[in-house]
Length: 204
Image 1: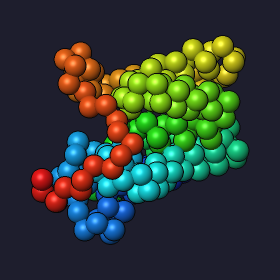
Image 2: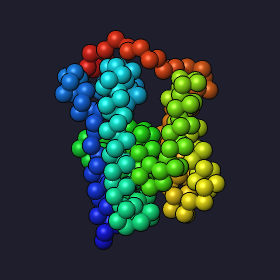
Image 3: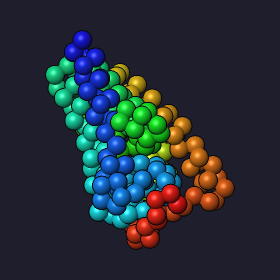
């Protein structure tokens, strides 16, 4: 029962669509109608600038980190990964957006992993940052760092729930980035720019 409650809390936390809410409140726009249409931090940053993008990224990390950490502390690592998994499910299909398409789970997955296995999560974050700065493709950084996580978890001799969680999370991230993979293969994937793009009107 305790584990189920942590998982429910994780799903509700993950369902908080910060990218949608913050853009709606601060810009009067629907982030789902601009840029890539994604509610995550990358699209918010590209469309409305670094400040709003970093705020969304921080909040998306925290909504995975907090439930996973609390579940791990009070009920163990299995409960932690279940709460974390529920958080990323909530981010993907948020209750508070009527189960419509949410984000691609990278920040929330990373936050949950920091809560369950901090060293693995920190190494994954380091790999993501290094790849992102080197190539400026958020999709490449996300896919490669996610695929590295099960290997890192196994090398550090983490318990089986962490290895299983990183493996499932890596597959989910690859699946959710399949359109990005197609664009990378075609040479049409947009390289990230640290300069803010001109804001687009809602409905563009």
